[in-house]
Length: 367
Image 1 (cartoon, rainbow, N blue to C red):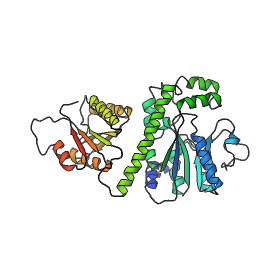
Image 2 (image 1 turned 90 degrees about the horizontal axis):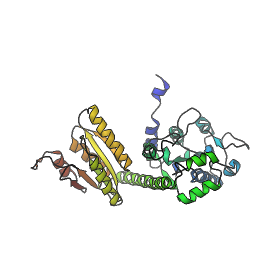
Image 3 (image 1 turned 135 degrees about the horizontal axis):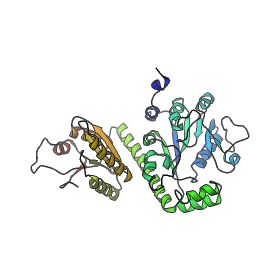
Image 4 (image 1 turned 90 degrees about the vertical axis):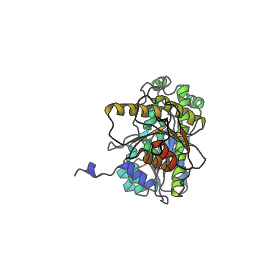
């Protein structure tokens, strides 16, 4: 059997390690909503702080602008002496051989020396008991890259990581700076070459784009905190939702023409400052036409800041209720009733009967 066939799924290993509540290691990530906000600087500053306290820390990969020696002062850079270039690739085997307490890895979406995404190697480091400090760019998150592709005219470059990686992060910190201050910094410091800066000012460094990116970054942080809260509640055995941040589930049948229902749900969630998920339960194989409908619904949901979930089960009601309980949802929106009379055994009746502590909205018309 080939080695690639026996290699475990790195995302599954990350989730398994993250679920160990009392482990010594930690996965901490600094999120930057645009180039130049200072995520790498924040990571290196934290590394200096830990190293100054006597922690065995090494910098395994980085990319800095300007004075590399100044940016990396008082830090042990793996495999480099006094001469330090402006960037360094990740060599995970060298890190494992060095076996430090803490390692700094810049830009999780970039490739290591073997051609793998750096994030794919994090699970090996955590499993070895090494704490990981890392950075990630907002547009390196797959859903964000897709949401902003049209706005940026397809100019966003670099690799992307799956959104599921965020679930394995113990601590996610946004490195925040106002768009106005960021633009001033970009003009005054050699973050980009003049030609690159001129192009970026017409695309991702436009003020309106930066404002939108910053708002999206705040939402990513809020959703990460929400996931951690839900995880804590599950570990504590809590089955009823807490009134911290609403979680709205929209049940969507496999039908055409439901875009307006998704938009209305997104608007309602925004007014409640709530997170919303659109859930579709499949009980049988779907046709190519139905797959096309659901793909369009998923894209629209992501554009509106929601999560689209595909579920499979023999019973729509039971599968949906299980999801609502597991996600600790606070409200459920069901579609309109096709019958004039109430039938106890239909999906809507079964969902209402099985749910407790959750507000259920039943639409009167198909919208």
